[in-house]
Length: 150
Image (cartoon, one colour):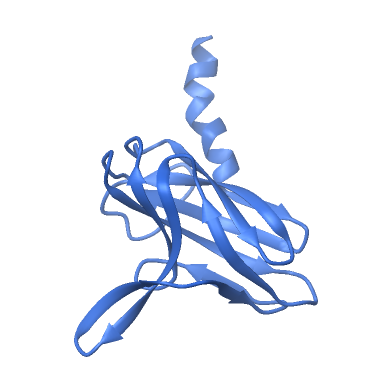
């Protein structure tokens, strides 16, 4: 039993590494630790390995009241977040959702996002349908996904 408990963090980290469904492959899904009732953000890379274009048209998670797709827009010297209806995924291309760019907004967190845990997210694509991913929760100030094992 003790060995199983020691392996638990490794087992939970495995699904966060990469997921694929059909032509869509998701890698490096992560989020930052955040408090209950607050707002979180989801980051990941989406590769369209197919011959046809696709679009990320929505997302949801049971840990937030609302999940939206956002981007950052520069207005003069100010960087503002704005919701977007979709993210285009060209055939053979990859789009990275990252701090300062496209990202998922997890609004109204029902529970805290705790470092070392994982958060389930369902991504909705125009052609590929639903793709389930697990966002690995990194420290609150993280700027990117931590290397596996760190």
